[in-house]
Length: 179
Image 1 (cartoon, rainbow, N blue to C red):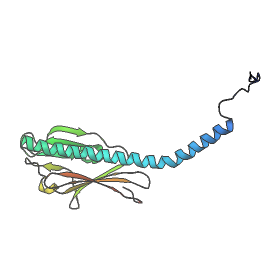
Image 2 (image 1 turned 90 degrees about the vertical axis):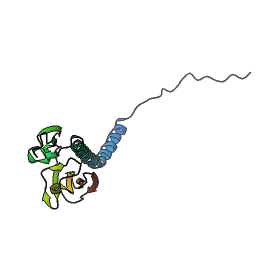
Image 3 (image 1 turned 180 degrees about the horizontal axis):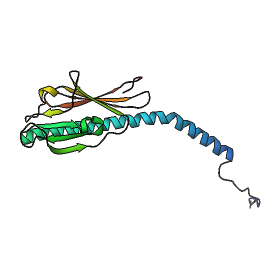
């Protein structure tokens, strides 16, 4: 009968990394993070600009709906005249033409935003919705340009409000230019 030989001296396996292997792994990770950081910053700025545009679209829809359901004028106005400080949706509670009843308020925008609201080249300080949901003639076809600084690639979203009261957003970038 054949009996296999049994070795009594076994090698002990070592597990883990050497210091050099660990330093190389850390260096590779640092290089990858340095390459990814600018892209991540751009993605965050794009997300922030899109979220702000969606907030504005939601508040425009609220203003339009409230105007039609209340059968009164409803306004969307910047807080203290500065869109970067946020905006308010207000209703004309007594029919005197002044929007005085607060319905909804959006807080200040994050740092790095510029906002320009204009209609026909004229700066717009309020967007007025009539009782039928359409936009007042003076603020019809308003463009609200939201721009978030992001290094050499600012993230821009344009919100267009039509005379009918409908609103849409359009994405764009302004590579090489500032907001």
